Length: 317
Image 1: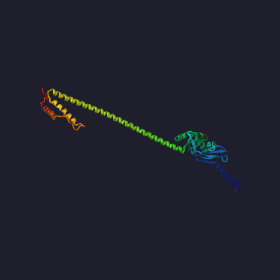
Image 2: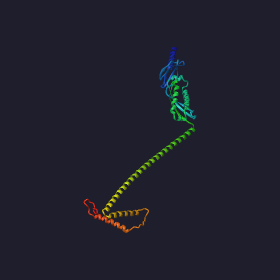
Image 3: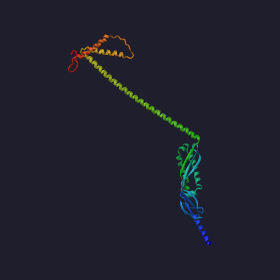
Image 4: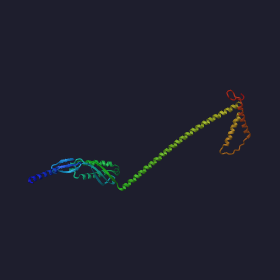
């Protein structure tokens, strides 16, 4: 083999090697920065690219995918001088590869320190109760501050989440006692409300019962008055009839009237709850005579001829 052939083979191998050195294949989700003599010239997007060997080189390979960064636990003093420990996570994405490479020395360390510093600032301006109940507010304030600070670096902070807030043990115990006392207070209030409602319902029931009882007494009084009125009317009518009978010369009517009253009075004495034995100067013959008069009057009334109108004619007319 001649020297010319050897030189040609070496030249061919060297040319292929140089060409291969200039071939760059960028994976999906990454951007490569290209430097010429140490100065940034362009950015290679995902795909096939060729650069000039020995003049151009790949400066950095930057991931354009969203990444997550853990914030280590740290102690924070709140506004009311309570010492708590807090940690979290940061979600970020590189939007501009050259800025993320050349505007900040260590992108991950810069985001981490910036987030930790602002975490202490935001949480230190709030009370312990606000820290435990307003995590969304803390996350929103941290996101606004850190995202604004990382914009010159070509980085977008998409989300910041506080994972855990750990108060001291004595504060946790005090909060547990406070929560227990608050629940007992609410239970006592509910019991008092139930008792008050029961008393109101009982009073309403007694009021309704009193009204119904009063209405019943009024109705009974009305009924009693009506009965007494009818009894008085009947008594007056009977008295009128006896008076008419006496005026017509019938003496048996007065005997009937006196005997009736006599018998009623004896019945009242007999029905008395306090007297079981009564001694009175009674004439048996008088009572029997009165009863006989009543019987004779009733017989006379039944034997008397009736007028066409159906009434018994009065004696002496």
